[in-house]
Length: 187
Image (tube, rainbow, N blue to C red; front, side, top):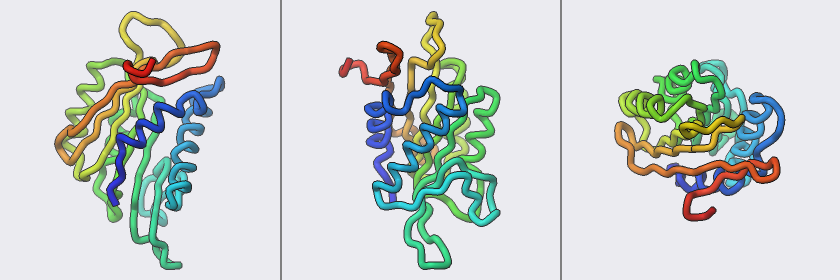
């Protein structure tokens, strides 16, 4: 089942103020994963964190499954990876797009990256690696010249195998200690 991943990105943008916490990077990552886990449940899927597909894969941050016959899960709906560390961006792409016995219908990768140039490099790699028709890559970075503790630009790219078919950009602002994400025409 193919999901409208850009619509899920819209929800991520509009609910960002409820996701942000004033703890360390790990807490923030877990809050985002929990957001998508709850969303999967609300949509009627079965979410699992640190899923290994019965020990056959590296642990995946979050998966959504459907159609359990009591013994096996038959529809691998979503694989989501969330990464804070710059040095693990290529490893994250590999986890998302690796060869495996069970291939998800939908993929979401959320990564912190240093700059726009690195986003372009990662997109080139992703386009050569992506074998699924519905993959969303979300890159969080700082705009040039600003010095703050949070990422203030968020770029989303929807891939259909080796092509980018849609993109969008959101921005983050700190309003009285709460981070809000918005599109330029919504501020």
